[in-house]
Image (cartoon, rainbow over all chains, first blue to last red; front, top):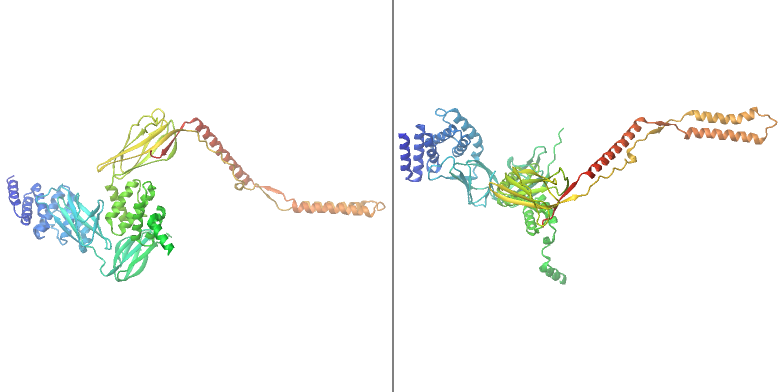
Amino acid sequence: MKRSLLLAVLTVVLAGRAGAQQSRNWLRLGVQAYDFADYQTALPLLAAGMNPAAGPRDSLWVAGLHRVVYILLERRQDSLAAVWLRWGLRLKPDIVVDTLNFPPAVGNAFALAQRVTAGSLRDTTTETLWDWPATPPSQQSAGAIRLERSGAPVSVFIEGVGVLNAGEQRALPSGSYRLLASAPDYARVWLQREVLPGVTTVVRVRLRGPAAGGFLYLATAPWGSVYLDRQFVGYTPVAAYPLAVGTHQLRVERPGYAPFDTVVAVERDQRLRLGTIRLKAVVPP
Amino acid sequence: MRVALLLAVSFLFGLGPLEAQIRPEELLARAVAMSDAGEPERTVELLRQLLNGLPAGAAPPLRREAHLRLAMTSWSLGLLDSAAVHFQAVVRADPFLRLDPDDYNPELLTAFDAARRTVIAVGVRPSLDTLVDARTGRWQVAVAVSQPGQVRVRLAPATGSGGGPETRPVVLAVESNAIASFAVADSDGLAPGTYRLLVDYSAPAGTAASGLSFEVAQATTDSLAHEPPPADSLFRLEFRWGPRSRGPLLRGVGVGVGAVAIPLLLGHHQLRTGSTTTRALFVGATVSIAGIAAHFLGRPKQLLPENIEYNRALRSAWEERNGSIIATNAARRTTPMLRVHVVPEP
């Protein structure tokens, strides 16, 4: 009881200090409250202290993430724990799981989250920031996502939600969301980003533009998956997809149909239009 | 020069650009052709032009199709917000529409589903013209909503139509599609007259309403026409010609030979004259020729029991169907029917 009171007093005192230092202090207080098994006090302090802009992603930060996950698993808020883990692993992919101080459930949650976030390590098209709340957030509160303006007139489609225009902020329940960022004459890109309780996820997208190349237009019947130089680029119809000058291997695939393969040569500023290609159905023997 | 001037003047005074004179269906066909040719920018232009020039009373399917194609093309061009607006217009135009995953790629399906969730729309689709049993029949109406919610469907008599009282609302919790049905029985249902079908939809995100007018009238008995007999071509041959037998030939030739030989061999030679010999030969030849003709022309008939049975079954089935039609018509004459048909909005 005394400890809780002390922590509460410390929280009030520290709340008056500057932002970055304040977050680190919240993290320390959260770890202390966790060590006293006062999870009720610890969770909001730890969540407030995880602000990546407030300090380095050091051992204290990693310890804080472990503790947040453990408390949420204890409270049977597994999905929220998974969101925190995915978020943390996207920020710091090389986290080593502390299997000495935490039960196997935490290790399992880490392994699952690592599998989900593994593909995002090469993601260089977006810069993601977080507007952390000034006071420790409740884990029941909604988060938000905001698209910041970048060079191209990007719009983002959030799967299951709708379109988000540049500058727009959308309140969302905490979770992982798939985002499709697109702009005319730019290569579209699918991303996955987390929305944490009470935190605004700010996404800045830098799409790959038409630098010294041409554009591909492609339609097929029926629709298919398009691969350029063995990289999946989307589904048909494809319009104004930027391509570097030179030759490229193009493949369209669809289950039940013979793949369509060809080589396309693109010149500078050329708009290469391949009219509707009829995919041939494969007749089962 | 004069012709050019005339053309310029006619253009300025109301004929307008060429595409403004094109029928909307043709403009849509051009847009589709452009899309097939890999010209999405031109497709968008044509579809926008089509939608801007579409009169208010234009066929809803045409408007829906134009919005849907515009949404798809805008999406492929990376104009996600524009695509979302047109997908929403599609949902408003036809809340029943579901995109087939075979025809639309996963991104378009996802975008369409997201548009459904952002729009509050309700659609109602009755059978346009139907007959229902006035005693036990129910008139069914399909309802579609864009988001899960509650739908209240009720029938109210149109003003001055002389219809019956307003029905109790049918309240449905609808996920996406549902069927509402109304009793048309005389005591608890619809008296002949004009009615409004009123649909009120409420979802957590908002409310919407829809409706249509329809007329209920006593229907004259609509009897079924009798079925014509089966065509001759459906019947099979009931017999076939058998092989030629030598019996008639031998008999005919034998009798002919006999007709010649008997008078010549057995007749008194003093009574025989050239005339009698000739007659005997003539009779014999005639009989022989008759025998030969009987051989070639008189083939025996062989009955085909299987085909006879088949033809009998064919006739029986036809008679049975006609019997059923007669019974149905008799039943219909004793069943009061109501005709329910949708009428244009006043």
